[in-house]
Amino acid sequence: MIDGAVSLARLALGLAGVFFLGAGMLAVLLPRPRQWSRLERAACSFGAGTIPLTLWMLALTWWGRPYSLPLILGPLLAAAAGALAAKRVSSKQLALTSTEDRKPKTENCFWNWLFLSLLFLLFLFATLRAGLYPMWAWDAIATWGCKAKVFYESRGLDLTCIEAHNYYPNLVPLLLTYLYLCLGQVNDQLVNLLFPLWGALLLMLLYSFGRRLGLPRTGALGLCAFLALNGATFITHLYIAYADLALTYFTLGAAGLLYLWLQDATPRGGLGLAALFMAGLAWCKYEGAPLAGTLVLAAALTLLWLRPPQLWRCLGELALPLAGVAAGWLPWRLYVSLHHLEGGADHVLGFYPHQLWGALPRVLWGLVDPALFGILWPAALLAGIFCGRRLWSTPRLFLALFLGGNLIAILLAYALAPTSEAEFLQYIRGTLDRLLLHLAPVAALLAGEGLKDFS
Amino acid sequence: MAPVKKWRVWLLPLVLLLWGLQGLWLLWHFREEGRDLACRLAQGRVGEAVRREDPFQQWLTTLAGLMPPDSTYVFLDRYEAGKEIEARYRLVPRRHLLLPPDIPPSFLFYTLRQEEASFLILRDKSLPRGPGVRAAEASPAFSPVPLPGPGLVFRVDWSRLRGEFYD
Image (tube, each protein chain N blue to C red):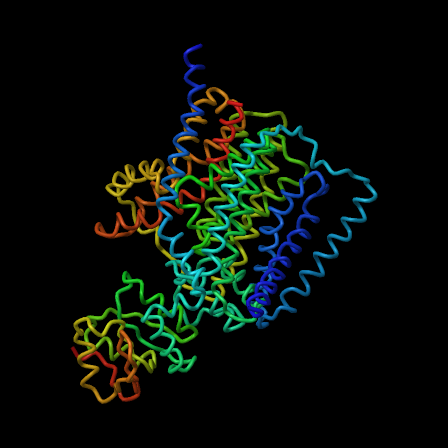
């Protein structure tokens, strides 16, 4: 009992360290952090903290230093504390006031409590499910959790004893390794708690974006519940320890911030924060970098179509998120090249037209399958239809381009997949849910725009 | 214009109704997991106890105690069965090589020698043995490890294998 409590406390301290690092990153990136609500800062700081932490662990491996908590946390915490102290001094000089409660509160107590209760019950289930069972799901034990165990045992990024898609980026395995170091042992039940936490932060981000887009509190809460409680995909990803939930979080952060920036509704520093989320995307999963690329592409196309004043300056500013992609992508690519890690050739062997036509009905069914996402995607489609002219005359075009472009990209990816005919359907079944999950919160944002129009 | 607006007024309740039905479906979908979770919580059968309920996992735990951490082993199974990844996960940092159970003796022996593998593991001893395993059973370089459980383990003296292709 006492051991369990001590382990939980060590895990909580480890996670608090990540939040603290993230707060330091936000202090550097956001000129006026108080223009962002506490909820937004909390939701962003965890993701922002994971990136320097895990990249630093990669750097330690490069320098041949075995992992230890003082070596990992010492310099990073000192830098974060310095950034926070400097920001505190400059904030006092600027005498900024908090803007957290600047929006009028439109209360609807019954619905607020209903949505909060539903989310509470969901997270109670997911937290217990994650924390009381050992890792068991396929990718968790085949890739992410397995690597974390190896990295912890070897106190470094040692890939000599396994073949577990060694070329995959390592944000999640290194974060799990860090948590094992905090726990002082491999405890693959407790570290699972990372995932419901990440899911909750994702919903906090969605709530914050909904509020910034003008939804009342009830609407924003409803939007979160609508995303979380539609289909089983999001719920299961709260406890199966896949990197896809982290990728979804970074996708939402990057897409939401870019969307707000296009609407001129983001406080200063929003684009820098979007760049950080882009780095997280590229460093989280193999498909993260192309996904981040499509975000920048959708933003650029939206700008070119809408032709806002200072178009070229805006286009130039997109270099910042692109730099974020490079910052998240390059270190690992360099490591892979220099250490001659065998790269994957999963999707580059050829184009199979029959697979494209075979995948089309299945992807379409996946969008309306109650088991995957319930009515989330149809609701997003309806919201897009009801936008009418505003879909192509406002920045909402960005959401439509990103979602539509990536759905086409998924189809094309299936047409390129070198699978046998017997495996193909299984391949789609095994991957479609998570590919759609990456996009689902952005679809929820579009549904939120529809909800705003209704209300 | 008016009928469209009226239709829109009905749309939100319709979406809410469908979402409500979806909620009921979710309750039905997760009922087994919820029940299992509640039972385990009530009986305190959580954490490592979940693993100990699986004979394969128990067997792997015992096996991990036998194998030195720097050893290499060949695991004979099909990837699709999903058991190989469980074994690899439990046995890291030992070096893991996966080969199909119906592998011919030449390739099995060649791999064992080339990779200096000191253990050969068959996931399910009740399955029909392939030619590679049958040859291993007949070879003096392999000694069976008397380990109760679902699988079969051989200690391998790889230096006694010629490890050449002679098919």
